[in-house]
Image (cartoon, rainbow, N blue to C red):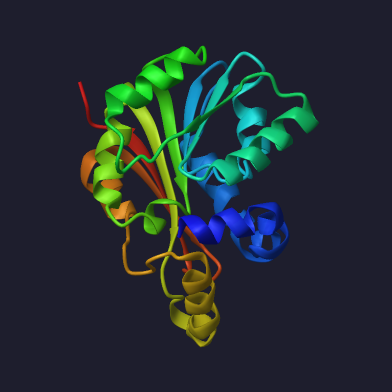
Length: 215
């Protein structure tokens, strides 16, 4: 998967199907997450930074986005996006959430001027890319402040009237390297309270957000 994104990074925004399909999930996910002004938000598997404009509207210049991705090439595109918009409150961290210890990731965040514990976390179309997404989820949870908000946006086969689109949805997942059967939002449903549930594009996009049940 790493090689795929190394080659694809410069063209990801053009060919990922973002605006015809996947942007809708980002909008619903960030609406459900509802981060506030001045908060620090983890963007897990941030890629080229497609969540950044939506998050900036929520957290403002006093907030902080911590973009974490294991692909240095995707982060390079995210860095260009931040520079182009003049966002000074974006911290980018090269790390694999499923491999690196949370303490080491917190050290990297702190070294770049962020706080070790974040107010919210968001994973859009990223957990299903990870072989051990459960470990990534556990590591993410250990980077959060008590009662932090968490959001997951990911993919499955379309449902109901949209089932005829299943071959296209499966092709998109295969090209991107996603496991459409992973259903990582189930971890959120099990470990969070006040869960908000939504879907889009005939159920292909599944959106969950809730308050992490940690003290």
